Image (cartoon, rainbow, N blue to C red; front, side, top):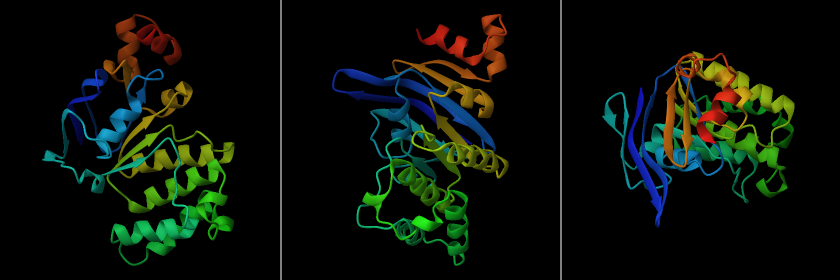
Length: 234
């Protein structure tokens, strides 16, 4: 289980995230929801160790994660920035070498490229890739690292319908494998379909955390996620 306790992040006088606490179990997908500026991306960057929080404790199986928590938590960011001097395949080689993956990683890497339709682009340099292809490259590279925790920030943006379907199927497979997943998305129908529980943020504050059935019970209605979301965030 990954626990996030009392996460706080400010930028000057602006509070981006305020005392955010939640957990995600292995074999579970948490939907991280909120309007623009709610603190979703900031929270994920802090969790992954790419942004220094002002306060907060992160634990995995009761072990405190320090600044090197990127070895446990892998993030696929919203902006698909790739290395300009590396080809698609070299991105995977870079991950394999950096993470000291065991022999045989090449077979998994080839399968990931095939699955996401990148086999024909394996020797293409980063700048020549479309936004969707860059996103797929980052997805393949991150999945190759095989961390126990995966964070996805708006992962379907830029993907074509086939890529979106493959990603959804991949998320479900990762859940079956026991990975802990947090998916930030504006696509509420995707969140409603995939999420076991949801975190709803508004201006950096947690408005709700739990299963959708619990949210509906507290609301006293059978409303869909969109209606419940708007009631909490507007």
